Image (tube, rainbow, N blue to C red; front, top):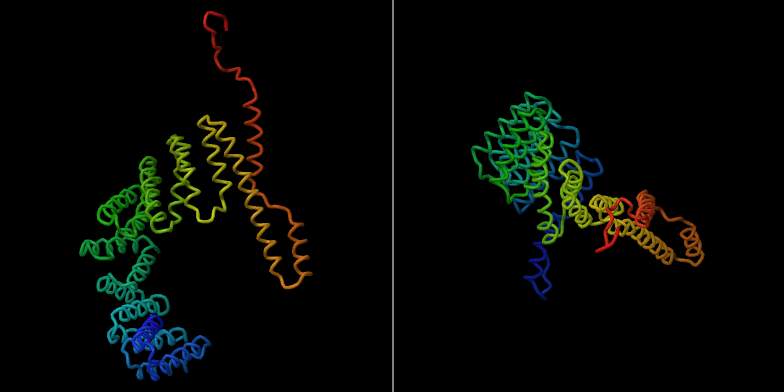
Length: 407
């Protein structure tokens, strides 16, 4: 944050000066230089000296935000230097004295972390984290505090129930806060950990509320993924498939318009293929997802596997000619990919500095055999089987009578 601000200020100063050639304030440049030198001392383990220098830099800072950054580093040095009690007190002071609100919230977060993980003062840490959740639901530090409280709730059932009640109370107190969707999601996650039908039903109810009130929030994908898993545990595979289908539908929005995908898209699509090939038996839907799944992969390392799956679905639908072509696509894809690998290796050889090194490199590359995934042998066996089946006369088909004649 400090470095970004420094770059912005430098750019503004340069734009303001134009061609006049004016420079940044030498005192600010010296302060920045001293700050980064002191960071090096801290990284090198010279904690006592680094703490002294950061204290001095805090006093010398002209900008209160720079003073905050130096103060944070004083506390950090004490923490990493094996003085958790002093560091916690340092963060406590900064949580009330810092100029910037985000710095105050970060200090509160770190003060609680030291109490929980270093000083074994769990109750005090939970009070501080809860205060942070209530005071600043819009701060990045608050999400981290929420994760700490959630992990505390995972440890045993009594803590889990208390944490569920805390999250429920906080969400009801301010259902429109920036933290509300995360409070609902983590409630459901803890209810899922109960491992009972009653807990799963309660988790579904919480997630339905999350979907209703926060469908446009970033946690929507996590909501659908968790609820589909809960439905699977409840044995409701139709509802599981419904949520997975809706999750896959978010891929087009994220990938086509924002150029990203998440692992949940691929996990959901693969599970839908499994469901539609098996208990829900909807082969057209299975083929649809088998075709779309490779599009979700930025680097289709597992393309042969997905092509084999697609071919299997096509066979199950009685589309033997189409399946034959898809099995051939497996071999074609692997051959093309291996050719690309080999050409890239040869390009690397051409970039070596001497002719001798290039020649030795080419010999090594040429001597290497192509690596084939196991799907290649599967594809070859099934191509042979399908070709054999398609050459055989269809003796099991009913006879066709010629008009006015015999069969």
